[in-house]
Length: 45
Image (tube, rainbow, N blue to C red; front, side, top):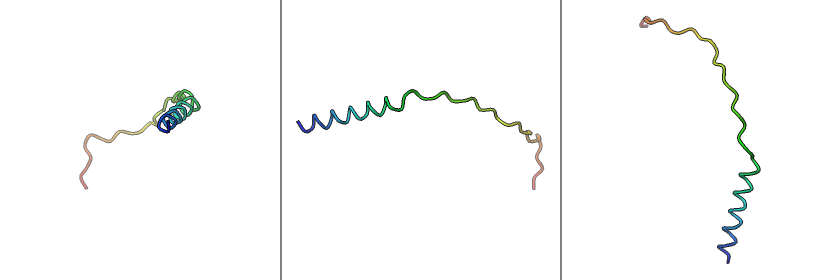
């Protein structure tokens, strides 16, 4: 009986946590900042 109650409480806790958070929000698109590409030949230092 003890193991049954523990399993039941665990299942209810997991279901409660899953429903409380709700669906995941949509991720906003990320606009990458402009950058200057490196030249083809980089001088050695």
